[in-house]
Image (cartoon, rainbow, N blue to C red):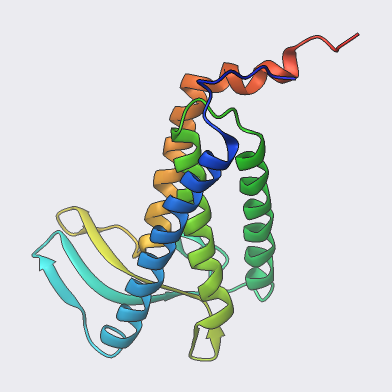
Length: 184
């Protein structure tokens, strides 16, 4: 059993932090995808910064970089993987040491992004296929375009990177209960 003291933040406070990150990231993702669906689907796109940043409708039936977009079983697979990841994020939120808030912010970002793309896999249909709305296009080099993405993708990447930093800085606290000798 991990000892806690009065200075250790409460689990309920950290769960509130997860929700405080998850809800706005999910809402922003769903709102921007709905906007892109209504405003970009029928046009060439909108240049924001010429040669660097534009908004352009894309519909991804696969995962990152269009992976498995032509596989018949991909949608069911991605839904199952997303649900498993969300269950794991919930478990982390319930078991992670509460001292450092960054792990809980990361969980909120990851879960918010996962829920946003999961929503699309259930709801969005374009040319008789389910998929995810992408609309953000960035050129990382003149003439070199990064594949289109969305707010959920950005939240997922930011959450994973933040969680890696969290584990680098606080991983010993996470592992401490597992390394402790069994109680006699």
